[in-house]
Every structure is written in C-alpha cells, then in structure tokens.
Image 1 (cartoon, rainbow, N blue to C red):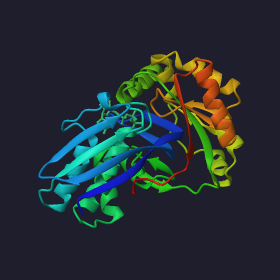
Image 2: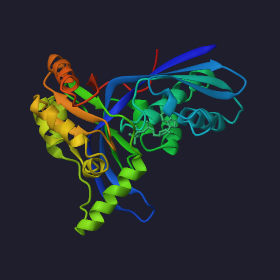
Image 3: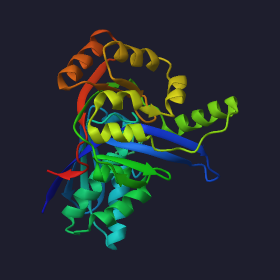
Length: 300
Ligand code: ATP
C-alpha cells in the first residue's frame, strides 16, 4: 500500500469539570467528550523518513517540525513496533487550531491509524489507545470518537451510549487560546476566590439527556469549568454566547479551553439558521454547523 487516508473528527466537551490542582500540576477531570462532524484528513504516503505537510485554512498556525503531534504519533508508533519506518504525512486542516476542539490530538490519532495501515503493522485498537494515551490526554478519544467520559487527567475513557444525533453550531474565533494558559487562569481565579474546589462528578442528568437523545435537556446541562477563565482571557466571547442564546440555542458554551463557542441547536434546520444569524449579526465571523456523535479516526 503506497498511500492511506484517515478522517478524524473534532470534539466538544459537553461536561468539563475540573478538580483541584494536583501536586503533579495536573487536575483530576470529569470530561465528557463528544465527537462532531468537523474533520481533519491525514494522508500517509510511503517515504524514507517521517515528514509532515499541513494544508487548509489554519495551516500557517501549525508547526511542521518535530513538535507536530502527527509526527510525534508516527514516531511513537514506529518505536512501539521496534523498527525505523518512514511516512510523508499530509494534513488537510478543517479543525480550528488551538480552538478547544482537540485538532492536534485528532491529527495524532489520524497519524496512528494511517501509519498502522501504511506500515502493515496490524496493531489492535488497545495498542493504539496505549500509545495515544502517552501522546496526550485527548488523543485516545480522537481514536474512538462517539461520546465518552474521561476521568483522571481525562485519559481513562469509557464510552457513553447516546440516543440520537445532536445538532451543533461552532463559532470560530480569531486566534487561538493556549490550553495551559486557560488552566492557569482557572487556578488563578479559584485561588483569588479562596473557595474549596469540589471533586469533579459526572452529571447524572447530562448522562440521561445523552442517553435519551433529548437536546433540550442536554442544552440545559452543558457545563465547562474552564469557561470563566476563557471569558476572562477573551471577554469578547461573552456577547457571542449571548447572541446564540438569543437566537434560540438550547445551550451555549465555550468548547474546552476555547475560544471556539459551541451552541446546541434544536435540529439541522435550526443549526443552519443559527449559524447564519451568528454571522449575519457579526456575533461570529465564521460559524459552522455540525452534528454528533460521529466515529473517531476512520480509514477512508
Ligand atoms: P485541546 O482542545 O486538546 O486542548 P486545542 O484544540 O485547543 O487543544 P490544538 O489545535 O490541538 O489545540 O493546538 C494546540 C497547539 O498544538 C497549537 O498551538 C499548535 O502549535 C500545536 N500543534 C502541534 N501539532 C499540531 C497539529 N497537527 N494540529 C494543530 N496544532 C498542532
């Protein structure tokens, strides 16, 4: 096989509960991931060495050296297989960069699946999940997709059943937000308040809403403990969220560490209308309708 193509989705967190800061600098999380139909494509072609090329809207913001998560993933896979392999990785980026939608993790997951195939390794999903967990806490989810709850640092995953398709709109912001900066701001705000940070718990009502496919109930139970920090760093996101609510969004939330804003719509038609209203009113310069859950990294 000389070329393999993998499609891999973005995610939104429908619950992101952040526990107290641990001594190792991480936080215990309850992180409910939901994969949505905004996809990066990762092509892996036979080559002597491992290289990456990034095309598409956000390509100028993505490193093409050894920091690129797709390169790191391919190298980790080759190391696991115990041999030197090469691959030219070509990424078509549709997922916003540093947008709180796990775009880098998606590319890492895409590279794992693509190189596993290109190199004829035939490694089972369990092995890929293990390598993914070492690459970053969102990478295992990008492999499986669907809806899943991550605990620990977010890397211990259990799939969650969902009772239907949910329709979303994502308002893309200019420029990204660094995940580390947003966590640091969250810690700073909490320290200033001085209140004890509760242990993160999975929201039973949210689970029920996901299980029954009830978009109205899901909309009222979306939570993100990083939202206050993201809004402090990017105050212009607050009117964007308000505008979505005014146009009938069932829920409006910052996606992960932001700055992308996620809006839950009633159905596909409402999602289209909502996206149009957000851009027409200037609340967002780009708004994309999508649905979830969708499958994780998939060979095409
Ligand atoms: P998360 O939601 O997982 O916290 P994010 O979606 O906010 O992450 P990413 O798009 O994953 O952020 O990008 C984070 C940083 O990772 C970027 O600033 C970029 O420099 C770096 N990066 C490395 N490889 C990639 C890649 N393949 N795609 C995007 N960003 C990458």
